[in-house]
Image (cartoon, rainbow, N blue to C red; front, side):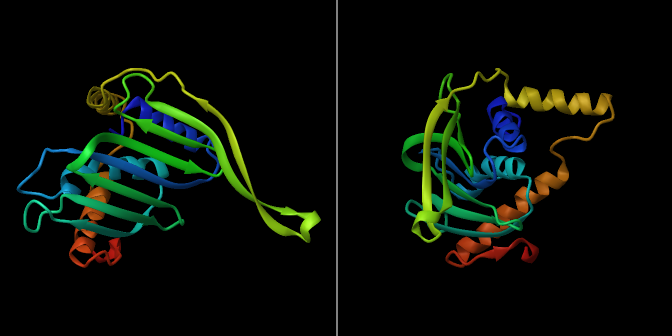
Length: 216
């Protein structure tokens, strides 16, 4: 999913400063089924979203706190809520479940200037850019008291080029080899995702206690 044109739009919006300072990201990957017997919802559903989060923020993950519940099978979480904190203060939340009435595959980025979403379940309008933000300003008429300013602007739905993410990833891989260029997602990225998953699993077993990645 990291190679999806919609996800790439979010990445460009962040890197170009369109959203301002990215505050946090949250993802939702829920549905009714498929229920696994050999892994929980965290390992089954979260890897794609963790990869997207790391790609978008470009920050180093520091710790993971995860909580979940096992309803259908013993010791296999059907729903997990996880918070990933990064060394630069950014934060991300992952919600994954195979026990939900809605089928949602969504990424939301909240920034200091704008907010943007990627909804993979939308047929055409997958990305929406919201000109919404909140800021604290000083008001000299109230003895420099801090006041909160909210902005509600337009919603822009950009045209996103088509393309199958897996095919685009394969094309990028082949192009990188032929042109001797660095691969965008390499083994280091994969290791980072696995370490986050391991930290989240350890946190699940410890009732949500934050686990530092340096400890896994």
